[in-house]
Length: 249
Image 1 (cartoon, helix red, strand yellow):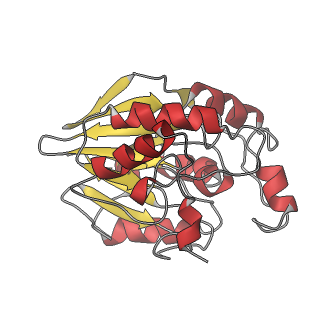
Image 2 (image 1 turned 135 degrees about the vertical axis):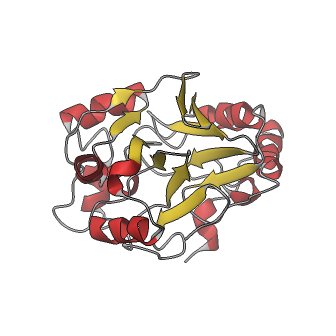
């Protein structure tokens, strides 16, 4: 589904618009000219659905030069190894997440507890794979688009957001950090931190961008700053922003 001049959604599950497998996060494809960049890899349960959408828009899997992971929860990283193999793309992630992926540490990625609590099917796991660390403030240039990594902890450790600057527009791919309405995603997990989340809201609101592209629950293509500003305001008032998932039962 094309959602802007250079942006396509090639995956989305129950917490999005149900384009692909129920468990997938929103998977974005950025057209950089001759090459593509994918943001997140979905759960990996039905990768053929993602591949079909990529081909539908006239692209080849081998056009994808990089896959940028926001973090390593199962709905974002479960498809990383399969898509890396299908595309030949270089996988990039936060340095901590790169370590989790290399070792296949299901506990650090909170996949073990998610399976135990029935959030993923029995036997689900994120397969070990190699990712190059994409450090805070580092930028890569792909064709006409630059991508800058922003360290954004709070939802979990090893979480990056990505600022994509095109000749006409700037997009903030916020992963599971800040959502529409300034909402956030707190979970009862070992590395979820409210204090870190407050810092992330401030950090994201300092960025200059037009569109806010979270991994679930909708996007804003022109007034993205409204949402990061709202999250920071609530934290500054010693409050806690609402849960993004409250809008979807």
